[in-house]
Amino acid sequence: MIDKGVPTPAAAVAGIFHGASVMIGGFGTAGMPDQLIDALIDQGAGDLTIINNNAGNGETGLAALIAAGRVRKIICSFPRQSDSHHFDARYRAGDIELELVPQGNLAARIHAAGSGLGAIFTPTGFGTLLAEGKETREIDGKNYVLEYPIHADFALIKAEAADRWGNLVYRKTARNFGPIMAMAAKCTIAQVARIAPLGGIDPETIVTPGIFVQRIVHIASAAPSAAQAA
Amino acid sequence: MQRLNREQMARRVAQDIPEGAYVNLGIGLPTLVANFLPAEREIFLQSENGLLGMGPAPAPGAEDPDLINAGKQPVTLLPGGSFFHHADSFAMMRGGHIDICVLGAFQVSTRGDLANWHTGAPYAIPAVGGAMDLAIGAKRTFVMMELLTKTGESKLVDQCTYPITGMACVSRIYSDIAIFDIGPQGASVVEMAEGLTLDELRALTGVPLIAGAALQPG
Image (cartoon, rainbow over all chains, first blue to last red; front, side, top):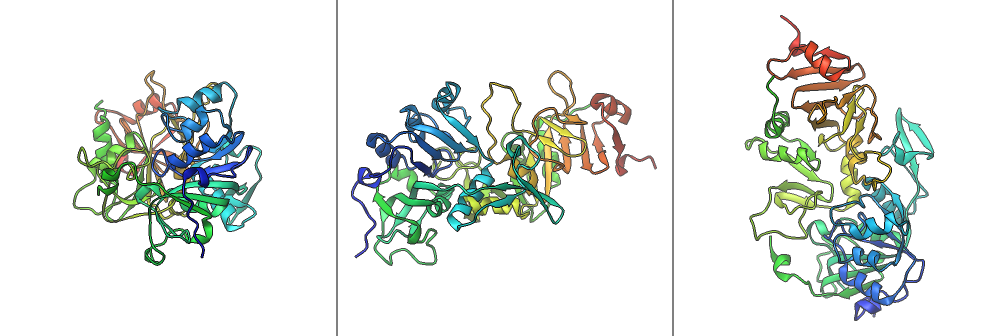
């Protein structure tokens, strides 16, 4: 019997190694898999390359991982925010390398990795600082920049529900990068608020098919009242 | 000269958004436009973090941390609204499915180059977010900005001095002093603040301006 469920966040992040590339889902704190990140901090892996839209907010989640000194490089679109002080300090000290990627290109490059594409030509960024030195091509009279896929060893994502085969559904705008990161990583680890019986999720509504998911861990929602609000 | 305040600018932009339009409103000043969309028109607001059919802010106490906009503020979803992942969201943008995107700007050139993501200051930490995708993806990109900086320099320029966000992507500028159409021929003046002449506007901006059809005598 296949059961991708693991008993604890610690078991879920087992095997994430020093120097690994790790995608972390979430847009700001919506969809951020906080308990998996806490487990990763406890587990101790460092020298990580992190792929996320942001570079941590406040004191928890990715911000805590950065504050713990575990991140060598971050690939993201929007690092600087009012509450990104942990990233700001490490970046200014020269402790973290930053690869800044336009948000849509970040999504497209992650999606390309999960789809087995060798590269993409994107119109976004053409003629700007972020395309400097990159190959370009004119196709049907429009200019494009060649961008390469972003792969990762692991993806840590948050979903609303899973069954034991790893089929996932998400909740509202917490979906954001989850489905495409699940496709792009060698090992995708999902924390979910609910485990459904096999067949308990309407197959027409499954967003991420279980083929893209290797481990799931049940984390009861920290804020059930908010989770039930409309 | 009677300048528009921020609410009047937002109201003026909202007037030009038609029934049935798919629209993305950028962070900051453009967000105000949502407050002035005519109630009798059905307009679809997209937020690039993954929702279409975005509604107004929730009542205090009804905020949901999983339901936010691109500015990470709590929002609501209208009946008929939908959620989707980031690749789909930016396909809507880049794929030309969004009719109108309204963005703020540091500078716009008379040929439509937009600068709105980075001041280029050496110690600044750069952040781009979806700005570059939004600038070039929508069928029409509107810029909403005060025409002059606090020190009186025109933000409509011959050539952007800030790092650009996108090339030749702006189709219209709504400012507190005038509205401009931007195209290959340059900037043409669609409307001006009451009491302002075209020559005065040329002096304020220091760039060549074409008199738009509505300003032609007779």
